[in-house]
Image (cartoon, rainbow, N blue to C red; front, top):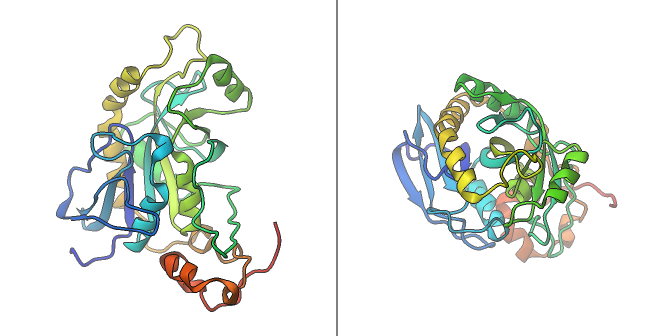
Length: 297
């Protein structure tokens, strides 16, 4: 079983630091052109499916959202052959009906981050992927059903505001995001979603609502202690949902994620430096030497 392909991975967020139930465990330290991932990647068998687990912030929660080595994380998972990534995240609620302990499977993102490295490309290779729908629809649907199967109160869509952090929002910011139509707010969905799309990996998030941010005047201002206390109550539900999703993945991918680069590469491959081709080989291997799209942006 240890030689079986690793088709799927879980990136665990705050409070979700391991994946119980794995057998035939291997711990992998993977170096990438973008540095080392957040932590050792654990692979193992889960009900007959070979999966990987990576704690987003490292064991013991050591890495700030702004400092996460997201390119290294996604690149390392790509080298293992991962086709599906389930991201588990803690978020604040921007809506009255998304209560603490509810789960949300968002379908949209608004980027409020600053200065994060959000692409694998450059160094002589220009690529513009489509991010109109930033989450894989097939994986989203599976996660919604899996979370309900686990007994969670689930919201099957929502706009996730991704803020820079590490401080939480001001009240003015929180109300601004509500006026934009934001439903939940967190610090880690980007650049994960962008990089997963560039790597042609299906990606979706199961978000655990821990608080009402600070827009709700009747609530105390959000604190880290409050977030962790609420989140820990939902960790087991998140694990159960993730396990169900991982063992019910489609046998074949019929979504556009699998071919996201097909119409996104602008630079002719004969103009791309060999060093860039070597660096990005796990991501662009099937396009090297092929005629690629021409266009502008």
